[in-house]
Length: 232
Image (cartoon, rainbow, N blue to C red; front, side, top):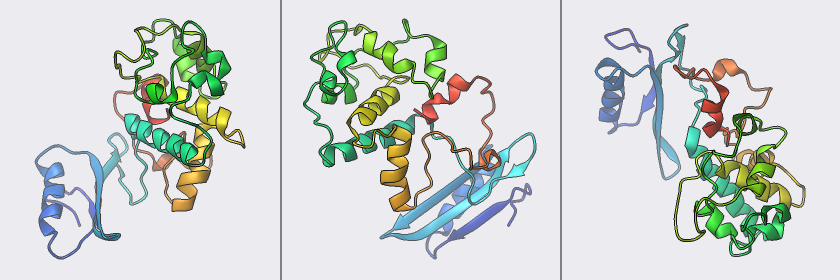
């Protein structure tokens, strides 16, 4: 169907959920939404599955059922899920020190930082003062990991909390790579141990075989560093 403004809307709602569809349409007609998708499952059964609008304002490419969306910092939750799976498999202990698994990490007073403190954003490694921008962008050669291992914490560990927005993904990835018996990266570990068994299409770093034409276009983002939260 199309709205009164000729905006394409697709999908379905189960009986009793018609008001959800009405509100979804209002996102486009009244609230200026460009493109979106929304679904609800109850007892593993879909009761709402809607998508509509456009994934690219410039080309007017429509939002499709399989359009991919950058999730930015929500990736941190999936990275933590991967590490929790490694913990459940006995690969890593939350209360062990990070340097037990990553010896180079024990530089500049970080030898007592535990995995639990690291995951709780208490390690004092959140600022970018000593980390060069090209290291943060370079996900393939892992130049950020040695930089983090050499850094001095910005506060007394355990007493403060500071959101490790740009660094927690690399820290988790390094721990997984060093404790996984197969030596997999976070990307591969998540894909093989979580996404594939669940038949879930969630990527930490878009594989080359997945067409970029399926992705939404984010306006105002011109620099790769601004996309990194989605692939941390």
